[in-house]
Image (cartoon, rainbow, N blue to C red; front, side):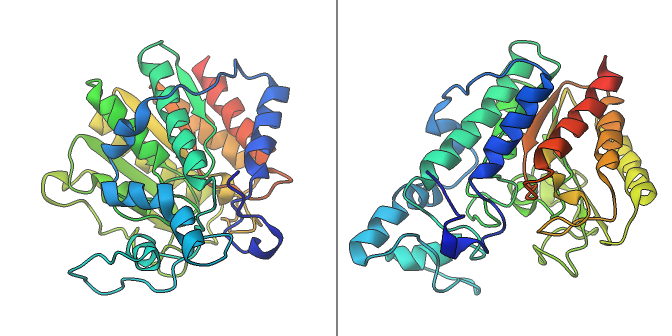
Length: 330
């Protein structure tokens, strides 16, 4: 089991094993719809987004490290801050080559957890595209929006939302991604930054002052063919409900102008105030209003779970979002 919450690892970003169970229990109690198991769309779907070397490391880093010395998790000792011409063969060098922070330890079953989180996201996309569901939710853990084509971090390893979006593109769909996690989805941005077939819009805390610091600024519009298909809306942590919802309306206008067939929502409930990883000055009720606003797009939705680390309120926040979403969708 992928457990970054062992007694000496509580500082790892709050991405603990119980998060998934808390959300599952809340959704089941709320009876919002049928709960199904994920299908297996194979590693090939992941390889459409992530570099082979990264996938190889995630699969075998724990075993390779354990063969070198007794340890319980794989974390980088150094980072490739400067441009490097060679990728080292040592597992320790490769950890620093692919990881951009120390918030994502690799345990014995990390690959298994990350692999099935991706399969869960693709399965939700398939429910919407192939089976005609209006809304499908992927309860993904670990989260993924900080994982890029050739890097991982922020408690995530593979980009669940991006792989699901790529799968939809391959089915001939025009896809937009709306990321409403508290921290910028730097991995998702990196994956689609040079592409015009997926629109990426993100509302997040200003990286001038908070994680991930180096990505997520308002002047990042995409590159090459992707110019004009990437929009960031960084906000001060002190913003209230009115400012947040007004910003959301501006983002939804961007999405309407793009005219997508399907919207993928990276849902981070860590935007609520007083969470362990931060939060805006907004209350739980705002999550309901966010759901209502997104529903006005009248688009098929694939909702992928990202952050949200307050275990006392996490399940309530997810249910509240869907209650808002379905009020307008009905």
